[in-house]
Length: 320
Image 1: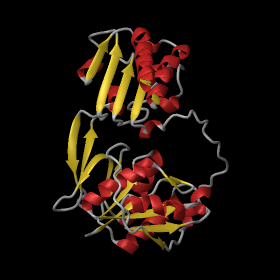
Image 2: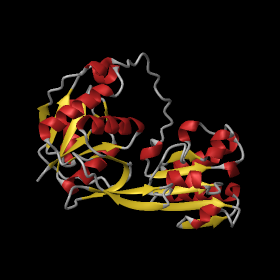
Image 3: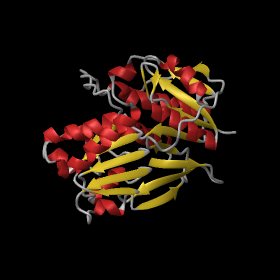
Image 4: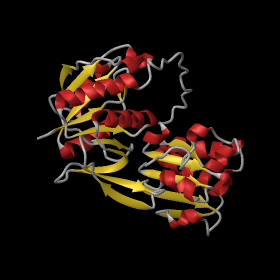
């Protein structure tokens, strides 16, 4: 069976959930070979082996932390040349998509971004995408070279499938461009204790109907009762009620959780583009004609200031 390269997104050896999802998808089309780079790369092996990686190619060097993107592209190119894979899978983060695009250009291959599913095909992997603001679903394959595919978080369930996970050193030679852009400082993001928005299984969002910064506490309380991430519509962000980093939509972040709860959000196409691939969608809005109700699985016509506190209380009671 052909091998499939999986780029490992990790923090000092702690593997992030989207990578484990990629391993599940990779097993559908071949044997997963993980590529772990940077500090702690060797420490990823146990988690990767538990989820199906037959081999783990590692390379640790200061360049991965000190410089932007290009050293990682150099390493992935070296892995492609060493393995001759059937495909390369990368998490569909902002950095992941830049790495994938640069890699595809380097190796003369086609690229597919923001896939939400993956299956084996007669002429190579076939990816499912949601396009045109999630109004259409397409099935796509790369017709030239080794397919480079980025996959959105929450596109597949994480499945344990123990494999050998043999750790092997990857030989990497950095090119002249690898040190072209240096990281001069880092500021840790303030932790809220909530999941990362794009990776969360549940997202609770607030929109124009929240009507103020002080009222986002209702949205946060509901999110915390569910162990969810907090999102916001563009209207709420533009009004300064919530940080831009939490914006869901075409000009914000794209999410695809198991459950999405929209509170006081009308459902304009800009917002729908960022959350329409959610598995189950619930909306609370006092306007029965709001466009969001055309999209939802469950809708509550009512004032969010009445509905959300009651919902939060019910959830906390059941948990208790």
